[in-house]
Every structure is written in C-alpha cells, then in structure tokens.
Image (cartoon, rainbow, N blue to C red; front, side):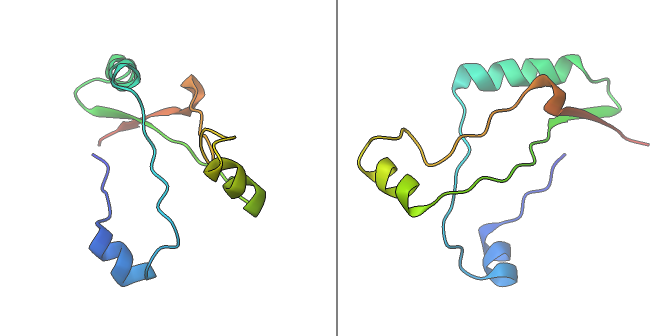
Length: 89
C-alpha cells in the first residue's frame, strides 16, 4: 500500500508550500482505474498508477486561469503504460 506523507510531516520537513495542486478524477474514472488495477494483480501483487511529470505554470497561465480562459492551471493525463505492478516477496 502506498504511504502518504501527512501535511504536518510536509510542513516539518519542507516548510510551508507555495501552492497545493490537487489531482482529481470523476467517480467513473476512479472506478474504471480501480477495476483496471484489480485485473492486473493477484493476492501477492499490488498494481498502482505511476505518473512522473514536470509542468510549468507562468504568470500568463495564472492570469488566463483566473479570468476563466483556461479550465485549470495544468492537466496530467495517465495512460495504460503508466500502470505498474509491485510483487511482494
């Protein structure tokens, strides 16, 4: 199971973040991803989605987002090749 770092740990280790960028998905997308991951695993394996990315947000992006021209500051797309399976020993 993935381990999440708590906000308190983030604050203690890294200080106050400049911004918090949330990743969201619709209920339907979550169910589809869950079923896809479940199909790939056995009782000793765990499938997970791995997304490594970099994106850049500049002043113009922020201005366009704040005026409603852009629907979001950035978007992350995940594809089947981003799914990994971890086998417990």
